[in-house]
Image (cartoon, rainbow, N blue to C red):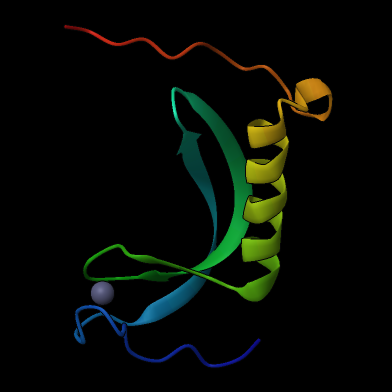
Amino acid sequence: MQSSGTCPRCGIGTLSPQVVQETITVGNDAVQVTVNADVCSYCGEHWFVQQATAIIDAALKKLRDGDTTQLTHIGEVYKAS
Ligand SMILES: [Zn+2]
């Protein structure tokens, strides 16, 4: 593991590697991924490692293409208004 250092966003917090759940939306649809990210202790920003970006991109592509057979359906998205 590389040393993560200070958060580039706030310049205050330190980054530590964590496993995070990230929800990405495409239009009205959303896909949830569990990836490794460096998380800031101060502002909470997630900085994704390259591997995580690839996982997110792959999930996004499946959602955009409507190729949801390899995705797990976990719920619905509602709008209140
Ligand atoms: Zn920060």
